[in-house]
Length: 116
Length: 118
Image (cartoon, each protein chain N blue to C red):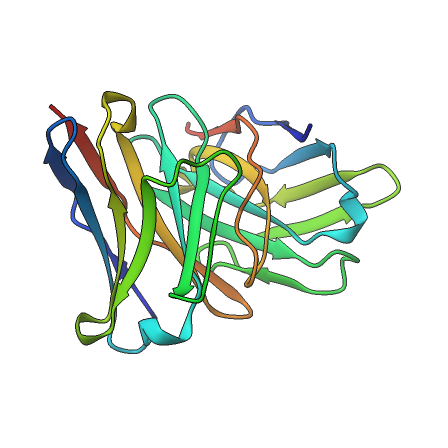
């Protein structure tokens, strides 16, 4: 069974950048998938942020600032969410997701980002 | 504007059944695949089930396979999740969300809470 692994927590200061990783298990290759990223603030539903497949195939969710961007590290078999110019309002849980098959969707365990 | 409203969650004893509903608006419901995603208290997101736009294809997470049934009524713009033989580990906030393999879970409601406890 494929697994997506995210570090439980991360922190950065306002104005800095945060790099959140999503590591894929060895049975799935990051190169092959659209990676979706979601933001969830306490007490609220998840919000779709963006998807990333390649540098020529990616997309931003409606109203999502360009400070949020995605990438992949194929050598590490990982997806990355980069948040630049951190703001206190970016403090939230972040989840990666993909469909490793037509019949299964996966979420990572989520990373709690603290902006302090 | 898109709005998604889930309902039907409540407290139920282990072994019991429950039917959740989801009523999206603001898009052509019958044209889109839909999903249920849940979140146990203090935990992360877990995909539960998928149904194609016409209802002909359905998929389930291993954790609910054989106990839950997803369905939809396109005439009434409503998505359902029939939950049978409920277990304590099914306790969660249940969201419905539009999406499939090449499109994100783009629209989410506030969720409906299911508590399975004796």
